Length: 162
Length: 162
DNA sequence: CTTAATTTGGACAAAAGAGTCTGAAATCTG
DNA sequence: CAGATTTCAGACTCTTTTGTCCAAATTAAG
Ligand code: FES
Ligand code: FES
Image (cartoon, rainbow over the protein chains, first blue to last red):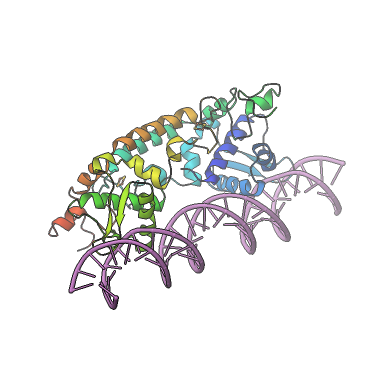
């Protein structure tokens, strides 16, 4: 569904939103905590910066920060900035100009799903996701649980690693 | 969302389902009518054959045919056979083992969408889509309209080409 | 002013997806 | 049997995505 770039972008922005204490968060910190390739993540976040969703600052004490309050950035914005909005508008069969005038055989059903996805993505804010990420057992990546970072004594529910 | 292979497979099977008159439909016929690369489509349909959704027959008068009645093949079957069922089960962020035990911050909302997608894909049969494909102005590919093939005098609603 | 930390911007490599081609095997027709 | 038609199987190329790396520009701190 989503590209790797997009997934990394979402995870990173949630991480930044949850670190409201830091003014600018260095990309190296995000990358090492979330176990994402630093150089690759750098490109993704540069794109979010160019799209106006983040601010960046160079030099010591530099890093990236949200350009707007986390309540005003939605999942739709993030996906749109990285993968583009075609998911929310395109034909399931990839035909150009999806519409009732020239529908494909799945149009009626696909648009229903697509519209619900759009509504949910527009409603779901970074703030909501960051709060959720702070709950117990919620994970941002396969490795990273925010609750575990705050309270290292907490063990995950299915204790794979000791 | 869907790979090109999957889209071609869906278009081709709808085409075959709509051609109920022919016993076996040659892949070359499907490819030329739907303007899909013959060799590429061949591979896709081979996969559907191996998955048990289609039968094939070599030699003159050969081709491919549905292995089951078109009322018993669903969009879910087609997608599952080509792209796999991960769309219907995987985490939006690609995390392994999507579940309420270790959710990601979007789990709750994504599973809602995903479940509706699954229900619709399981309900939508080839028969339904083939019937829809026969309606006026419904297109199977950018180029191919079934109604136009049956009644060449009919012009598309937004007459791009003369 | 010098050094270290950081983003920026691009080049480059590896992997996966999409598409092309060729030859072999099966099957019908005459 | 001979020849034509068709699927089957695999090698190969091209493009996009993913990932790695390095040098230049910016800024804070001593
Ligand atoms: S035309 Fe295919 S989904 Fe609208
Ligand atoms: S864990 Fe991410 S959608 Fe379920």
